[in-house]
Length: 290
Image (cartoon, rainbow, N blue to C red; front, side):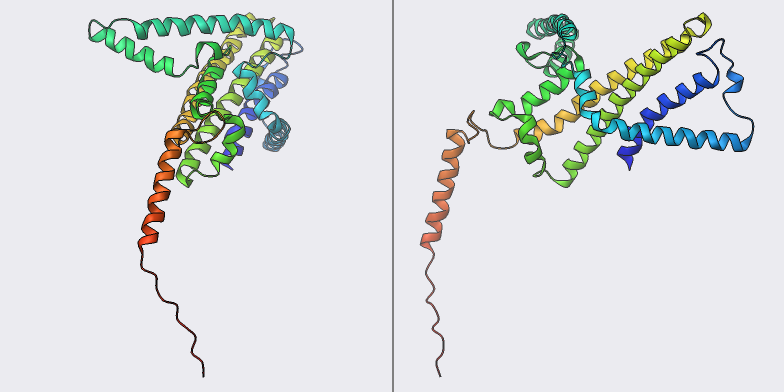
């Protein structure tokens, strides 16, 4: 129920309410008259609220299958179309320059306390990025990509393919933490899309009313804030998964335990068999015959 309200109904309700307000004010056909937005009749007001609720619920149900696609678009997987692929290449170069600046700060000498704090902050920010050859065009994509690399791919596993099986082994408390962080990520992503759509609709309706352009700027600012929240939620989302997977035995690229770990398990098994062989055998009891 909480996921339905936060991930589906809240972002869709923001967009539906803003669109209804612009339509009610007549912004698409002329000058906006905001006095006509809220009906004065209680019956008409109740009917309007019912219509808004139905439209919000219907839109949330229709968009729910596209949740993964909505996240991946903001991650920067834009190679399907030539135009977006070219834009992705430009943004990857921007991300690579930022990554190189952070790496230089980490490798620089710390002569005083301020320099040490700057280097520690750069190291923390650099840890939230993947390697230079695995960068994506957006900050959200780099945060999730770094988590994928830390969680499974350094052990020779495909994180996206193996995570459903690993998730079945986590404890109930860890599963609740993962669900909560994933809900926060999806909510922030959907709010970012919702405010972007509000920005586009408001710009279309209010292009001839310069005094109301601040509404478009405010919606765009809220979209950027929601996107920043999505990046923070992504970093919090991948951290428990990385710790959980890192706590498991190291795997070789073929998906098997490493030689050192396998040798340890063989020695433990041999010790168990030795202890069991030293136990005295109990004589079997013969059944009593009449």
